[in-house]
Image (cartoon, rainbow, N blue to C red; front, side, top):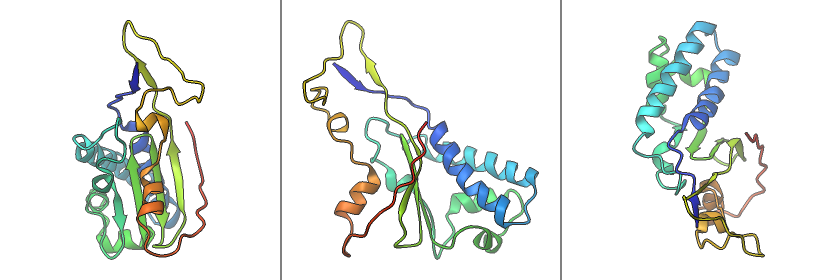
Length: 182
């Protein structure tokens, strides 16, 4: 019998999300390296604290909406808080960051969409590692599903795929995926 890795860390996912947002400040703005570093560290701390009771590696979609960073007609409050720590106003952040951005920070995957109808792109992706319980062995069925009956092992559907398949009222569009694996 095996289960998904119950890894409690969210550091690689948060690092990917923070790095993505920080690059906009570095490239688009008049923000010096020290300010970018402070913004990055602040946002890492804020996200870690915010997500600590909403991180479920065994069910990555659970809490996905809570962990979603969204900039549209309103600035995401967590991003705004990190920006204020380096002296940026919400208006300045709007000038530096995409006006329509959705960033999903989920266990094993970080992805984003720029624009309401933009493509969903993957920034970070990793696979859960099986944990072998002492005195047990991992068995494998001929189909390669592992025979565990766990839907996360047999058929992994990411939160974004679920949105694309189940959540769209408009006709489906082609989605290009940019993947960076660890």
